[in-house]
Length: 330
Image 1 (cartoon, rainbow, N blue to C red):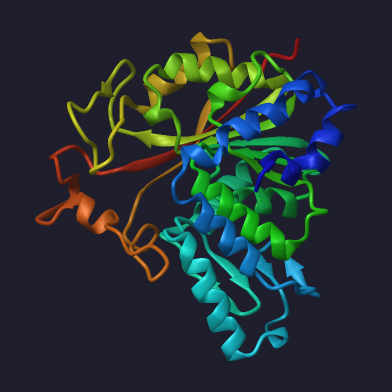
Image 2 (image 1 turned 180 degrees about the horizontal axis):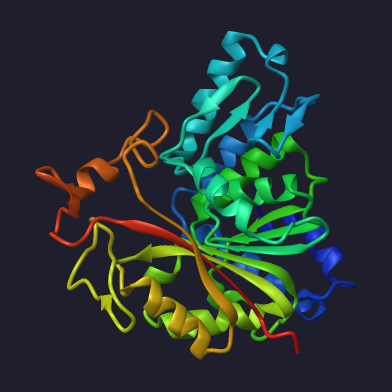
């Protein structure tokens, strides 16, 4: 792609008369900078992968109960195997699962399980403008659209995840108001105060300053907008947090794992309203595991083989928790 921003032309056009209009003048340049071919040696191969995807009318699709695109009867076994081989060029597939014309993309994460935990606790997404931070290949963005969101913008700094999102949208149809941008939160304009709902799932513990991240999230929300925050926590009292000395569950750049009460106190301190814990659970190897579509190490090797309640480094095993809060009404 000589001009990556062309893939986002419908979004760029929409921005002009949207609550995000201040972003329109700069966004194309930002996209092209993040996806410069000189930055990513594998990008020519990813482009060839997209070029090999067949043009086919899916006839059917569903984003509410799963992400399923295409009538299986439209592809015989040979064409399905060919599609599988093409999409494998974008390995590893971490977030999903997807079903494309009967081809099951069995991703590392059962992201649908997380969605099932989150969905009962949030404000209905119908007609809402939604931002999903750290969205990976955009799986949850499609589920948000399935709940009636008017437009969903996902951001993720991983270019391969962005290309995976292109492959999914190729089959779903470019007309859908779902876009995954090659950005981290630092690329978002400051103090937009525009989104009805902001999701930050699996991001906070990678931020060197959790308070700054919470402030960034708050300033992306319109007055009264809702924040959905999913992150790793530890068991403990208010004021307690784990600061891993090195890696945590083999993950680099893990900075803070607070207790639930500590995180709630942080959210209150930066001015979010009514922060509350709505769900927590231990991550299991049924939810996160190696598959044919993600063949690298996964949770099973991240935990102590003698005690699954500890990481391989000896820290408490991952507990994922969901918090909800609102921006001030004015």
